[in-house]
Amino acid sequence: MTLGRYVWTRLLVTAPVLFGVTALTFSFVHLLPGDAVDAIIGFQDVSPAVEASIRAEYHLDQPVWKQYLLWLGDAATLEFGESPITGRDVSATIGRRLPATLALGGAAWLLALAVGIPAGIVAAVRAGEPADELGRIAALAGIATPNFWLGLILLFVFSVRLGWFRVIPPDAPLASLAMAKFMLLPTITLGTASAALITRLLRSSMRQELEAAYVRTARAKGLSERTVILKHVLRNALLPVVTVAGLQLAFLVDGAVVVEQIFSWPGMGRLLVRSILRRDYTVIQATVLVIGVAIVVANLLVDIVYAILDPRIRY
Image 1: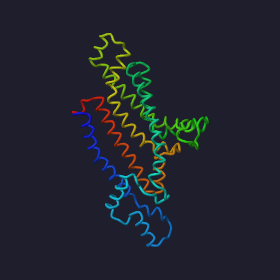
Image 2 (image 1 turned 45 degrees about the vertical axis):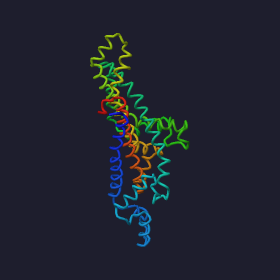
Image 3 (image 1 turned 180 degrees about the vertical axis):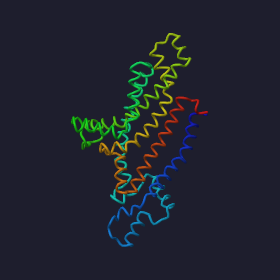
């Protein structure tokens, strides 16, 4: 099977998955008690006619299946309407928040790769030595440490006690030095677990590759140890790491919900939490849908990259 045919096959498989994501997103939100009208009215004493007009405005007087089709049509064109709570355009709101989440998730992902890959190489090459033991302990601690706890500790030590970082984001553009400095702590918080996971996975994968026959052959031919490790062993050992690294990129966007709340980061995670507290169902649906689509697309890209690196999986 050629690469192009494989990509088209994966796209066809992804289509029903995306449809399932929309159905689950819509269903879960509608399983919550109450609806948007209850959030709008609150404790106000309004007449049944006013309540009926509000329900008609947001199509809440229609059957659930028809509401879903209307919402699905709007979602396909990225038009999520207005928030019944704030009156703001939902698509524009997400458009303002999405870059901040992508920047934080991308920075955490790059940090995880920059730390996890070198650490995994050192641990594999120095197996059984102090560097390996230290790396394994650090990786285990990184995986076991909850990111919300790590974020609170970093915030307390470096922001409250030492005063090196701001407690809340500066009033500055996203692409600015002040915002980049503030983003350091949430980036470490979000990327630590991923870096630890990549370290352990790469170490294990490289240890298996180092026992392979082609490694002994390469050494017997007189190749330097650096060439054997970086050109041959690392290339083959990176295949499972690519899968995990791609999935981690999607999960970092998802996992940013807690971290953004801790550091008051103006991203989609914080928007989702605030929308849940305000019962802003329109924003909740749109935000969860965007996160779900990001995870599905990340899985698709991982499959394509894996097929490029290892043509055997196309068959």
